Amino acid sequence: MNKTDDGFSYLSGALHCEGVPMARIAEDVGTPTYVYSRNALVNRVRRLQTALGTENACQIYFAVKACSNIHILEVLRSAGCGADIVSSGELFRASVAQIPGELVVFSGIGKTEKEISEGLKAGIHIFNVESLAELLTIERLAYAAGTKARVALRVNPNVDAKTHPYISTGLKKNKFGLAPSELREIYAHLEKLRAVNICGLSCHIGSQILNEAPFVKAWKELIKTAQEAPFDVTYLDLGGGLGIRYQREKEYSLERFGALVQKTFKGLNYKLGIEPGRSIIGPVGMLLSQLVVTKKRGSRGFYILDAGMNDLLRPALYGATHLVSLVELPKTRKFSPVDLVGPVCESSDSFQTGVRLPALKAGALLAFGNAGAYGMTMSSQYNSRPRPAEVLVDGSSYQVIRTRETYADLIQREL
Image (cartoon, helix red, strand yellow):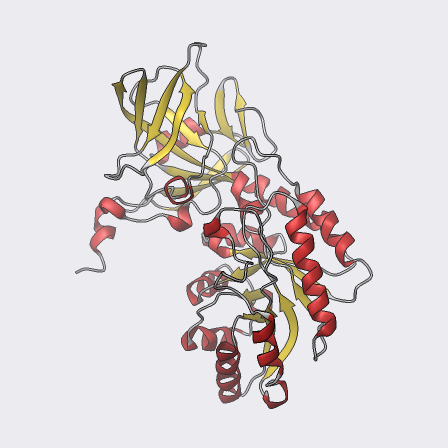
């Protein structure tokens, strides 16, 4: 791993997050631990804000599902971000982080009546609606509450994002969004609505997208739908989905993405919102882990770590690869292929196969890069393993923003 702009670098052969040695965090806090760079996070937000410009007043709503720690959300709020939520649990986290309701977008295909009511009470900016049934439920609950809900209709543009099928959301075979026939069905109910203000359209076609073509195709379909809609469309939610470089992919930068938004919507009188998650938080987080034991099998060995698939699920779920860095650079240039695996009793508990690493002994520290997104939020207590700690680094100091779970935490709801 070389010096990066995202908070992690080698100083005198030792991996640091900003000014703090990762080895010090491991010694003080233990492993596995998620480590985030506060200043790199703010820097990525600022880069995107600058690239988006001011013409369409494009508001960033951070996708809370990517990383929901309230301290991270507080940093994002202080940098001017709102929240894109998909549950009332995420609404609760956003409120604790003091993100005002008017900066909250409520997405998600299965909102319950309780969640809708909580969103109405919080005075959220807008509901992204995915069905006629949901719209009518919002209408009924808003009317009963004596309020008026702002709504954007989520369009399914039938665009292939060319990404993993588990994170594709914009095809007609996906469960998300409204097909043209479903939009027409909603249009037929417009005059009957008393407590809903349908003022926008939204779309989201998937995640980890690394080229502009799917975005442009989806956004042009969104513009076309807005121009043909039988109501005044003043707001467009462009979704998220911008990818990052996990291995050797060619990254589509925040600057290019912002310029693409400006180019596509130049001269159009819409207020815009976007919902980035991974592209903001992913590169500024690493998962710190320790080598427990080594095994040799033929020409290849196994390095068994104290982090497992319950800590970082993406490799097992998506076949994703998070490149690994040694916390202390080796003095040898002799490297051999090894499989990096976890301790969980599943063969899918494997981080990377055939990665070339030097001979290491138990206790050696390693860190998985680009782990800030969908790492801690997808963690679990599988195999009755307490979930990791989280640390936020700011310059030469750090704060534990989530303590490591204890065995007592494992059973607290069972007593």
